[in-house]
Image (cartoon, rainbow, N blue to C red; front, side, top):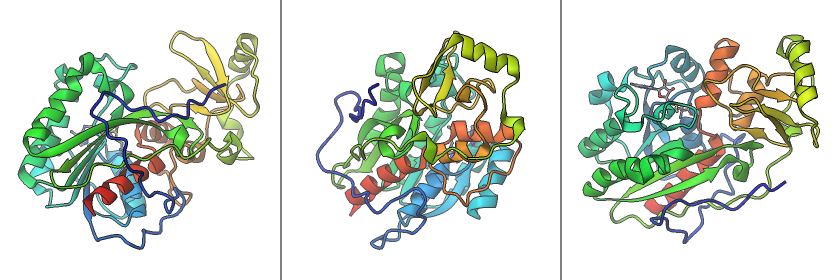
Length: 335
Ligand SMILES: C[S@@+](CC[C@H](N)C(=O)[O-])C[C@H]1O[C@@H](n2cnc3c(N)ncnc32)[C@H](O)[C@@H]1O
């Protein structure tokens, strides 16, 4: 098995010089860095707050958030003591001046799991241009965007260029990178496109480099799990008939055409998937805590909704240690 620990950069805009100083950041350590210069950030399309936690870990103060989904917003508020505003289309005029704009904009139009309509998806696909409009008005020092890996190559790169070009016209230097959560201390293969825009005059973005092999699945699995998480006996028997695992513990993954595979790490959590597409050792679903751990949410973080809501929210979230490493790089560039 190859973990492909090499960081994967996309296209040729990438700068690889310099390393982010991320040794002081741990997903379970909410202590801000000592040298935090008192930056502020806003968290758009905030979900349950992966970016917010990563910002706090970097000593950045999050002053505004926006999230249309009430369950996610309630969870965010309960854990992070900031009440998200609702639909970005209705609250954008209330966004205060800030240093860093963080936005994990909706990914469904660009995802291989969605219809792939991209920017033509008038409901979700064009929301990223709200970010461009907000940047034009408020001119933050840095913008950090996150989306699925495929965003970088959607429509042969035209989709990403149509976001980057208007930001370049606003005098930002922009670099995208594809980062994998497996390289940042999480046993989850989750590759995501990050785009960092820095106002001209900042240093080049020092993209973080891989942190070494991922921890074992045992580090995130709970020891005692309630019977309700177990798949029914027929599903378990079908899985065992179709697949023999080489590892234990392993997460068994059923792909879109029903093929089952297993790995000593978890495939990407997804918001809109069937309940049984990931089964621990082919037997049981992940618990809410395990899903949050797979995304690097610290232990005190409490899910507030039903199982299905937490599954959707965790599947949508940005992996905290990856976001923290990117923000550490941004802070270095802004120094
Ligand atoms: C990919 S998720 C971002 C998750 C977030 N980064 C986290 O760590 O949890 C995109 C989010 O955008 C929200 N969203 C979609 N349309 C929105 C809108 N018009 N205004 C505000 N939020 C919106 C969705 O409900 C979803 O939670």
